[in-house]
Image (cartoon, rainbow, N blue to C red; front, side, top):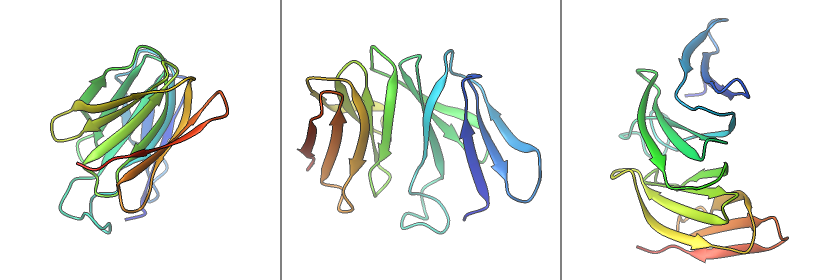
Length: 155
């Protein structure tokens, strides 16, 4: 825990770096446009979910979210459901769900086990940030029209 660093860039790559060496460990190339943001999953050794693999999520101007296997440095799955660039990502505290927000005004909640959308909320503006509460039953979305929506998420 705490020995890896992730970066993303307009060069359409995400990179995994080890704090123990100067070269990148994995060069993750599967997006076709700039990567806007990345997020580590709350899973793997040293987390509250140690029995689940550590995953990196990347969101791009290509309207996709990619999930990366950090051990192998390979694409685990591509989440295709947005129609415009994806600007915001947040994993649920248990690591089972991912929220993604886009310029298409939609907030998608993805089941990571199934790699599919299980809920969608549409607002009145582009979404620039999403965040779960620590219990994992609410999600906040910040919209470009100066609204913040708090959504109830109970399965």
